[in-house]
Structures are given as C-alpha cells and as structure tokens.
Image (cartoon, rainbow, N blue to C red; front, side, top):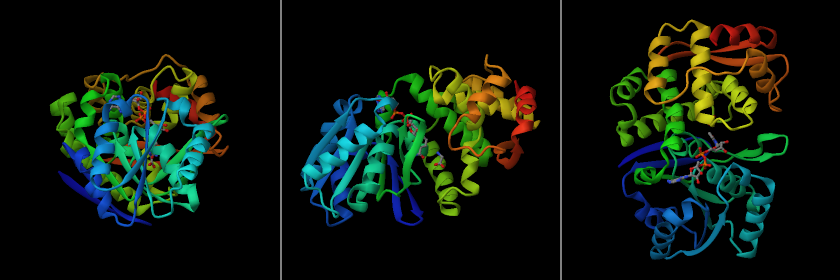
Length: 344
Ligand code: NAD
Ligand code: GLY
C-alpha cells in the first residue's frame, strides 16, 4: 500500500493498494467523532462493492444508511443532489457524521457536492472505483453537478477527509472505461513525468497499477497544493481538454470523454510542433486511443466555445514542448481555428 498526503485547506491521506476496501471502517473510525455513515453509490457499483464497504463500516461500529442512484452522467443532476440532501436530513446525519462516496467520478462529484453543502459542510471519504476517479476526480476537492446549460456548472471546492483507492476494484471495470482513464494517465506523463511516460510505453495496458496510480496522485497532489482553487498551475490538467471537449460535444457525447481527450492531446501536440509528437501519437495508439477526429476545425471550435464557463475572447491552451514540459499559453479566440487546423 502507498500513502500520499495532501496539505491544502484540509490535510488528508490518499491510500492506494490492493484489498483496502475491507479496511474502510477502521480507517473511517480513525477520523474520529462520527457515528453514522451515509454510503452513496450507484446501480452498477453498489452490487459489486456495496456490501463489502457497508460490512466494513458496520464492523467498525458505524450505523450505515445507503443512497443508491442509477449509474451514469445523467444522474449527476440537481434532482439526484436534492434527493440525497433530503435523504441525509431524513436520516438525521449530523455535522460530525460522514458521507462515503463509492464509485467513479459521477458518484464522487455528486456525493462530494452534497457533503460540501449539507449542514454547510460535513466530512466525506472518496472511494474511487474507476481509473479516472482514482487518478483525477477523487483528489483535489472539485465537486459538482451538471445543469441543463452544461457540465459541472454548480459545485464547490471541498477536500475529502480521506481517499481510499482499492486497486482491486479496477478488475471489474469494462475495458473501454479503463482505456478512457488511461488517457488521463498518459496526460500526467506528458505534463510532468518522462519516467512515468516511459513506464507506460514499456508496459502498455498492463502497467503496474499501484505505481502508476500513486505517481499520478502525487503529481496531482503537487498541483493542488500549488493552486488549490484553479487560478494558475492547475489549469495544466486541462491538456487536450479544450479541443477534446469540442469533439466530445460535437459527437453529442457518443464519443467518450477519454477518447475525445486523447484526440485533443494528439491535435495540440501536432499543432504546437512538440518535438515528442511521434512518441505521444504512438502511446495513444498503443492504448487503443484515437489520434485524430472526423470533425472539422470549425465544428470543434464552435462546440468548444459553447462551454458556458469559458470567457469569450481568450482561451488558455496547454501546449506540450516535450514529454514532461508543457506551457499554459493564453490564445486569442481568433487564432484558434488555424491552430486546430494545423493539428488535424
Ligand atoms: P462514472 O462514474 O460514470 O463511471 C464510468 C462507468 O463505470 C459507469 O458506467 C459506472 O457504473 C462504471 N463503473 C464504475 N466503477 C466500476 C467498477 N469498479 N466496475 C465496473 N463498473 C464500474 O465515470 P468516471 O469516468 O469515473 O467519471 C466521470 C465523471 O467525473 C464526470 O462527471 C466528470 O465530470 C467527473 N470528473 C471530475 C473531476 C474532478 O476533479 N472532480 C475530474 C475529472 C472528471
Ligand atoms: N480535473 C482537473 C482538476 O482537478 O483540476
């Protein structure tokens, strides 16, 4: 097992290893004070891991209530969020009690936002069960729900009290969803770490999960400690995401987020003239991820800019110079079309 410690507005540990789910109760107990736990999960993950998680919590002396919603991004909305708040209130959870988010990024974001706002904030534990959630969404305290106008438009920064990443849960992940998470893992290598990148090149999809997840989490921890509230260095985590978002939205979300981000990474690497572009394209192909798109520069631009969070005249592009060396480059919107075209 590896431990990564975050020191931000709240200090907490991220534990990564095999078989950790059984220790959920004893580790939660060490956080102190809580008597009741609301275990929040969804309809795919709960049947797989809900009983183990609940049993571990009960064995440690907690009273456990469970809130399970239908799996999928469609559930990450105001209706589910309000239903969860009402459930917490009806079950009389107090400010010293705990929420446990068991699932991928959808559960983590939604349960985290409920924890940030119920009684003006109660503690929560992230138990990520997808690769994306393990290396990205469970760490760093971004919580949110989607609004009809766009994704993640209502949310809060709220750090968890503990992240428990049991690498065994990834064994039941469908291969395509695992691949999607790999796009984010490759992203960390390109942004910060040539050694991590080389490990991924050498081992492909059979990479050492404990090492790779730990390394990604350490890298994210460093970024969050430098820029918890996302006003500077944290923007680098958006490598491939602006163009990827345009591709994903133009496909009406039929193309997965991970595949769209992979195509976005390939496009910015080519367009920026990154000297390691051949290695970046090769690793994306090795992981079964796309390096191109059928969409036009006009369409990508139009959908990328329809994001309601974006300011109108300038976009911060994250551009790779080499593996482990990327820059934030403020780019006028007027230059974006020719930039995208250069990378297609
Ligand atoms: P997800 O939570 O929808 O999980 C993907 C799919 O995998 C779902 O069908 C789920 O039921 C299934 N699944 C989850 N764990 C499983 C397991 N162990 N075995 C079998 N099936 C399993 O999606 P995700 O990709 O984990 O997360 C995407 C969400 O995360 C988006 O809503 C995105 O906005 C958010 N996100 C948040 C942050 C952040 O910093 N907060 C960062 C990146 C993404
Ligand atoms: N997923 C991007 C961030 O946490 O900032």
